Length: 383
Ligand SMILES: *Cc1c(COP(=O)(O)O)cnc(C)c1O
Image (cartoon, rainbow, N blue to C red; front, side, top):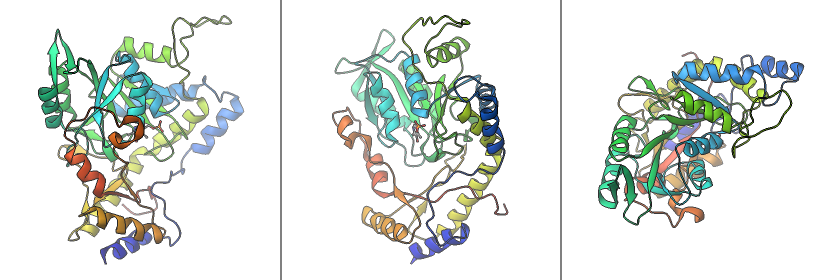
């Protein structure tokens, strides 16, 4: 019954009986103008004014001290972990309920993810679960945190799921008390505030993504947010092959990456960023419509946690059971309304199945029941 009602609500909202995607990008501003400008100037690649402008504007928007543009969010995460000093053979705590990029970035350094449970309200890493994992399985020696198997836990990555902020201040405290570097995977939470502060600025290093399905897109792209001037300079250096500036000589002073965002993509990003406040307003309005539509049904609409102003990147509902979820997925997708389950938990994927895990009861509960529902921005709607 309410699945049918939900389907017609979504079709009415998007005024379409055709296929309705989960999240399509919106290009209604200066996108064409800026992109064509890069073609006219021939500066389409890793040098150009849009890359610098995009960095400055993202830093301004998020109130981050520094921002370094990268080819994608995974590259930004990889760089953040690299700059935190994560070494091969070390452990990095993160959540099993995340997109695979979080764990891939950890593995690129030869480090291993360790999975700790999420909070059912925020869907992000739970500070209580983190603390009990550390108390039960770890010990601090000489200002370093070790798992009882002897491996060092260098860092923890929290992910702000679907744009809802995790309890990042509490996580930071647990990490600081135990000599673990906290990194935010803020790929989904551009525009999200926690206690009035932009996500991604609680940790000294964090990553944003501008993939095609994110709040704003550069086609593919990412950004490293950074609070320390020296680290920011180093980040820029190692994401641009560590080449020392010279008119014609090629001298690279350390092993580095080719991760710089091209100007072509940054041009798109500059135009998208101009529209971000409107996008977020529209997404928040849609979320509030979903919330009233789903009130008094067995489907629980996921609302922003306490102390949060969420960007509502991807709206989500919690079904009463896995069986219920599977029926809802089938019915909506058959009707051309795209919905999807949350990602399969990371510790069940072949490359991470040997990982150390804490108690993952909440993650397992959520993974069986969460469904994402269409969330594209619609600017024609009166807000
Ligand atoms: C999108 C995303 C990323 C980064 O993805 P890219 O496609 O590499 O930009 C990282 N983590 C999470 C949780 C994401 O959703």
